[in-house]
Image (cartoon, rainbow, N blue to C red; front, side, top):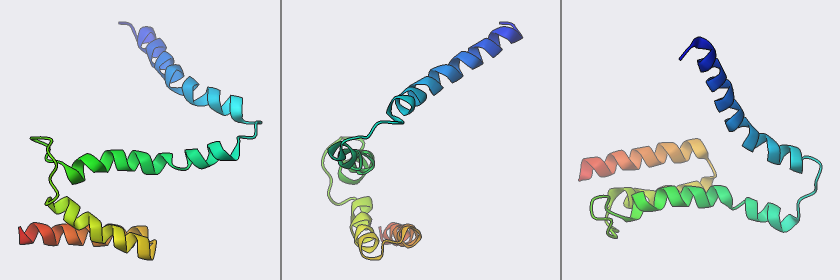
Length: 107
């Protein structure tokens, strides 16, 4: 492939990536969304985080069986409680890391 082919390929990949983000923004820029849709969209980050964390916390990766004694789950519960009470992202990260380190030392 020539240098021009690479440049055209790079530009096409950029457009394919950019257009799906740009079109909804352009279409919805001057429209008022219903409050129910706005509320529903607010649940998406929590749903994605839950979908990413649930397999790690509740199942054994080798057998894909339910495992409630994993150190990750035992550490997640007090970390979640700390996050809920303090609303501190930095403190939650530190507490979670510290508890995970202590759980690793204990096991």
